[in-house]
Image 1 (cartoon, helix red, strand yellow):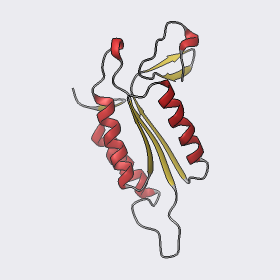
Image 2: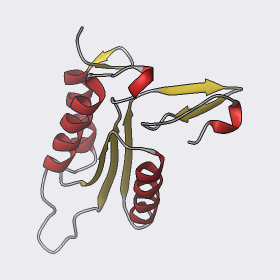
Image 3: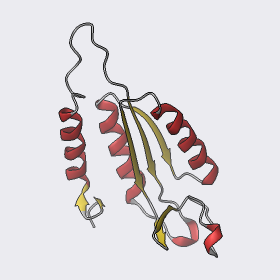
Image 4: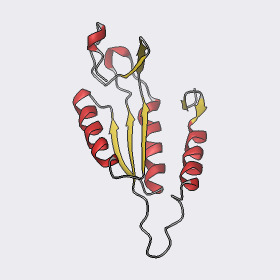
Length: 136
């Protein structure tokens, strides 16, 4: 089985990131005396879900996306196999960083669930038995 993000091969997603960043002026350095736009990204790849089963692709996909974004001069906050505490800490850090950024990007690979029109990210180690247990 090939790595994919919502049906798109990961190489296509990576190419799309480069194209998007190029269109936003991220590939070329700024003209002399001009400040480069500040770019921040939160990249999460959760795969070690214990009893829910392991997902081999998300940590690898997240590492590839983080590497591509770093090459585009993004400040990357990266979390692999994050439990609820690590995800909350990363989200807080990303939120603070995004305030003064010109570009803020969020990438998530891992289990998620939709319930009553709301989408939730599932952290590693989550014990979800009833609706209020949905953490993110």
